[in-house]
Length: 290
Image (cartoon, rainbow, N blue to C red):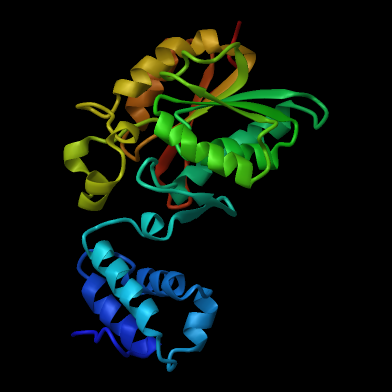
């Protein structure tokens, strides 16, 4: 199937895009609709309501280029420059990992713990380790107005993106960006540590992720556990008594990460929380002793 550059209706353009993307995307129709809406400057609702309308030549050219980039495995979020996460929209590009919906499980766990242990007028100190786009820190700041949050990252480029998002969501007074390796930049112990650390084995991940997303935010070493080992080794000194640690994990890593957590916190309660698909997703370390 081909697409003429000069003239096509919305339904024709979508059909071409779906045909082009079906072998590389699990959601070719959704990808096509999002990319066409972006090219036209419309909402998806308007696109779907106007399937018989003819697309202006410049928008059609832009759409065709976006689809071909998507066909080369580039994430849709990078193509349109944004991604929704926990009901909020974030600026994203190749400097940061694309926020995943499964990470929302980490936000749920952190908010639940915070509201159970801190009254609304109590100041809660949180650290988000490896913040990337800032999506975790910002989502927590928006939903926990009593929280002050340190957000660390080794990448200055990632922190530049996070700063855009912090300003976009109006939480610059409560989220402090710190450049450095894992826990090193923290100026003091905190009540709650959260992290979605690199945990993938690069040779085993999807081509689109490996080709386009930053390896620094992905590479968990030969067994996917390298960053967990370093993070958990330093975590006891970074937490206040009674605090908690919550780590996102890969779906097959629960046993290994809980063992590392119990070694670092032998007196704590360590448990695993599943995501909405029923996969192991978050290791929670609770009731940390002094």
